[in-house]
Amino acid sequence: MSCEQCHEREAVIHLTQIVNEQVTTLHLCERCAADKGVESPGSVPKTPLGTFLAAMGQEIATESPAPRSGENCPRCGGTLQDFRESGRLGCPDCYRSFEAPLRDLLRRLHGSTHHVGERYSEKQISLPAALNRPQAADLREQLRLAVETENFELAAELRDRLRVLE
Amino acid sequence: MIDLSLLTDGGVGWLDASGPSSHLVLSTRIRLARNLAGRVFQGRNSETEREDILETVERAARDTVLLRRAIKFRLDGLERTDRQLLHERHLVSKELAGLDADGRVRSGASLLVQDRLGVMLNEEDHLRLQGLHSGFALDAAYAEVDRLDAELGQRLAFAFHSEFGYLTSCPTNVGTGLRASVLIHLPGLVLTKEISKVLQGLAQVGLTFRGLYGEGSEVVGNFFQLSNQTTLGSSEYELLDHLGKMVRQVMDYEEQARQVLLRDAPAIIEDKVWRAYGLLRYARALSFEEAMNLLSGVRLGVGVNLIPDVGMYTMNKLLVYTQPAHLAVAEGVAPNDPDLPLRRAQFVRKVLESEVGRRG
Image 1 (cartoon, rainbow over the protein chains, first blue to last red):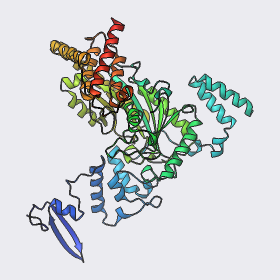
Image 2 (image 1 turned 60 degrees about the horizontal axis):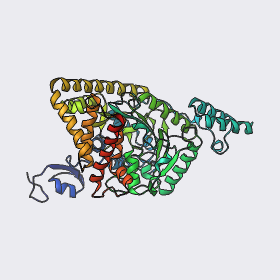
Image 3 (image 1 turned 90 degrees about the horizontal axis):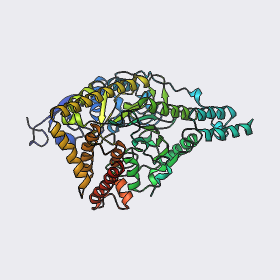
Image 4 (image 1 turned 30 degrees about the horizontal axis):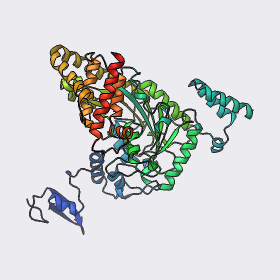
């Protein structure tokens, strides 16, 4: 079958559209399809994740025809389409905004969605003020680390600073 | 031009061949991807935000024990040769150094480095903590980076999700954010043509391989970087343990391949390694690729005791200092200088001659 657009090349893309409640199928060659903005399976996206993401995008399209990939992350404004193109998410909140498709992606990338490694707890963080005025407890911790790493020069300095504080 | 002598070990402590299994493994690298909570990822950061990230992280780093005396390199303020030099030393990624095809350095792209530890800033993630050790030393390298992670984590709020773990700009790094890689020399497996089977086997157990310079780089001189592919669903220790076991197995295969070669084709192997040595010792012009391949041959000869005069440290030194930017800086010319192959050959001759004199 030849391409319905250029009538020259072989049609390899068969695009089914619903226009005005009418189902039409377009038979296009790769180049004409690309001109119409249709990606063929042969046009591999540039990112390493590309092939995978392309597949994911297609699945999302078939599973939920709702304009899901157009939805924005409320925090950064990024869309699934952006992610599909760049292979990068916009912000940490994207993991919540696109949780369902990402969960699926993570399962396929890593074979799991559950982090079982070290956990970060916000309790670890000392107040920003402590950054500028290190408190005794903070210094003592640093001193302990300095001794542990056998950095005796630093340990001596920290001991002096502790003396001043106390 | 940057002064690398500022770094205590010149940034090349990892090549001193002092670590375990140094005859096969050049270096072990650990990196942890971290992002600051409440901020958009690097791809959406403005110039101002990147400056702010740099400032925030540097302030926190100066307050730690492990990066308190860190040297800071702003990649966006360096000439291309200097950026390439840092990349050749495996201190920064190709992306951060702006050595990708478009050749642009992102504003705020920086490196903090102290001894074997460093942090790349405004890379694909806000922070990329890294540690580089000589030889095969997964546990030691991880212990150090983990301690740095704890120190920075006490001072900075990291983006963390209760189910997905540490959040990264690319989902391939989410969870632990850990990538452990071992740079290993496998000429025996290449010569016996077993290498593709081994690499396929690694892919089946969730590991991956890259070339000498990591992601997107080609394999030169039979050097392979073996690393974990997944970062989520296993703990840091499980990931390291699995990679470690597989690397040990690959090392066994390599040793076996070398024994087979020495047993079944001793004359061919002997000729091959001495031929490589002869060319390095007397050639008048060497391209980087040719030098790497010849060094690989000599390294094999040193490893199986066919070439007694040369030490592994010399081999590693030649590997680093014959790279284009290193050689160009040492010789005071541009990395694309047409005479570079002549200067490379001269440099290699000089090093090998002095080695023979010292030992002989």
